[in-house]
Image (cartoon, rainbow, N blue to C red):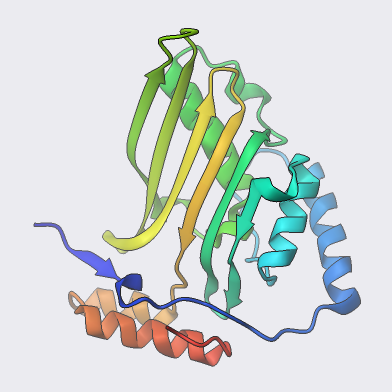
Length: 223
């Protein structure tokens, strides 16, 4: 039986967080956009976004030319990463995707395309270490009507080789190499969690207590 870190089974959800944005937020988004445009495909991970659901939606809509109803976000920032859910759909094309699209093997190409997206949006997704994001499954579906393929990849986050339950990312890639949809549930990871899993296997109650304290310190009401 595998060991699993359970955090959100106790219905811990981020509802509201009070933060000041103003001109600082606008400048930060402009700087981020310029940085992403200039950034080549690499493993450098930026610091997490410090924005809420509305700013996440605006950022994704502008970058990927998505419509308002194509993006759903309940993300809120905590001191230890974003908390909440994210879903987007449409023709989602990462900026550094050209080399990945040239790959011949269907699954390898899908993995490479998804990997580019994860790296480009690492700060948004709260990823500080790509090794913590592990592929759990990859499935390819061929339509009986037009013979076109769709590949679904599901990733799970791990902390010190323990699966962090309810912390996942799902990416769907179409036959043309464009990402069709992204779904994610993000869970903040306090430093105390990393230290605790080094010592022993945590109970659900211990995990919930650590995360509850983290959310409360950010002014978020855990439910």
